[in-house]
Image (cartoon, rainbow, N blue to C red; front, side, top):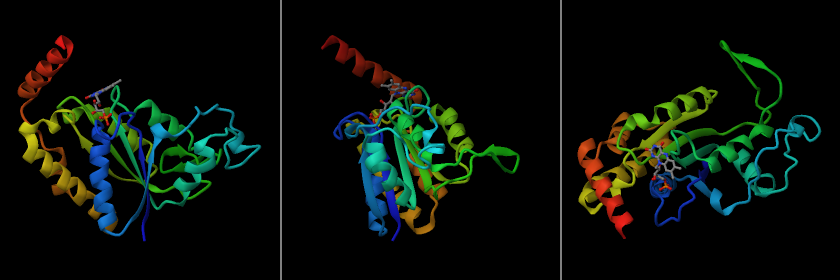
Length: 234
Ligand SMILES: Cc1cc2nc3c(=O)[nH]c(=O)nc-3n(C[C@H](O)[C@H](O)[C@H](O)COP(=O)(O)O)c2cc1C
């Protein structure tokens, strides 16, 4: 049975979070395909910033000296997983701070030494790190919003990145006007979960359905501007 750890870094409640909405459907698909999925909501955990002391490479090899939920619980859970899903809202074209804090705290899982992977310098693994999938949602309707983030993900993947799931116009997709499109997107996200467990990849067709535009940019902009104007006017 595939063991999955799903890390959710949205700081919003489940009712409001579009990251969580997408992740819920991915998890549903993975469980349907027989995976054992542990969900970790980072906002409920105490995770300190990496102190940059490198003790995890020297004095306490493989173990962080900070005492918090990352050291006591999440790190060992993560190491046992075959597959990790990293689900984050896009903030300033990147993962949010909560996810970044989590990623930095994975440092004990690599060794300090430099070695080469083709023409790149990398750290060897101390522990077997799980393969991973990045999932992210953003507010703007342009899929190009994810370009910088996707480049980072590919650059830092060490061949462990098996899929990327990005959903633009995520706040707009819950507008009742897009009810049918939303249903298609969520069904495709569930299918992506099934595919990930069955074949360790997501088909192009499934990704096309997940990333489909809701509407043209101008229409989305008009709707969003009207929404914010109403919020400001009270
Ligand atoms: C601080 C901050 C930065 C953001 N940066 C971007 C951005 O660079 N591009 C974008 O399209 N949306 C951006 N957004 C919008 C979020 O990605 C969007 O609201 C998303 O739905 C949040 O995820 P959540 O609903 O799971 O919390 C930003 C939101 C916040 C609060």
